[in-house]
Structures are given as C-alpha cells and as structure tokens.
Length: 159
Image (cartoon, rainbow, N blue to C red; front, side, top):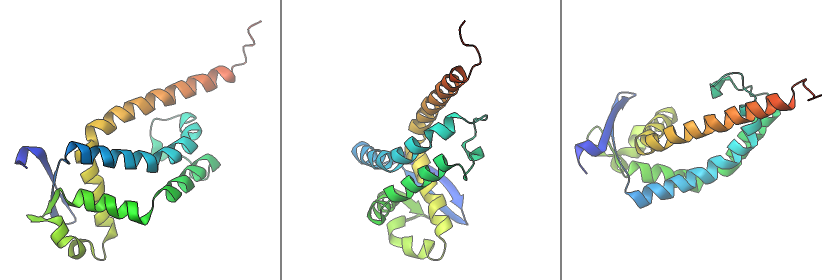
C-alpha cells in the first residue's frame, strides 16, 4: 500500500492512517452495511421525507417512525458483525505508525468513543465517494416524498 492510497487523521491524540480496502473486501463491507442500515432507513423514510430541512439531525427522536427505525438498526447490528467490521477496518489502519490490530486493545481500552470515531473515519476513507453518491440519491428520494406528500395534501380538488 502506498501513501497515496491512505488518509491520515489525528483523533484523541492518536495518528490514524487508513488505507483503502481491496475491492472485494470493500464490496463485502458495503453489503454488510446495507443489510444493517436498510431496515432502519426504510422504517424512518417517511419521517425523513416529511422534514422541512435537509439535515437528518433535525429528526424528532420522539417520532414513532424514527423510534421504529432506531429499533430496527439496533436489531440489525450483531456483536459478530460489529467485530468483523472493526477487524476488517483495523486491517487497513495504522495507529501511530503501528498496524492497528497489534495495538487495538491498548488504544481503545476504556475509550469506545475513540474507537467509533476512528471507525467512522475509516468508513469515510473507504466509502466517502460512495456515500456522497448515496446521499445525493437519498436527497432525491426525500424531495420526491415531499412533493408527493404536498400533492396529496393540496386543497386543490381539480374541479
């Protein structure tokens, strides 16, 4: 792996260098993520479509559609899949110049927030271009849902 195939970020005082996964490994991770996220996104889609803003952080967590989506997400993630994801992403990461699998326990012991920040960074490095495309697609679906909702609630009866 060359330097051009990696991105570096300092998180919590540790320098993480993340390289790209081999294509078939990346595809496997993407499929796993889709299987984990799709049920949650599907359940929350109607709430996302009704947003007056483009920021998903503005979602009302008390909305039953969002709560159902969060529950679906929690049910989709297994301990085994999460470990597999962490192991896969660690296999293409160096921490402070050392392969992350060699120091993973020491670096993240007592600091799960750091582990999840690194994991998110590693996913961005490997799937950033895909998630940009996916975000654009989701925005398009959200816009169509809003337009459909607007037509359905329009006072114009067509008479």
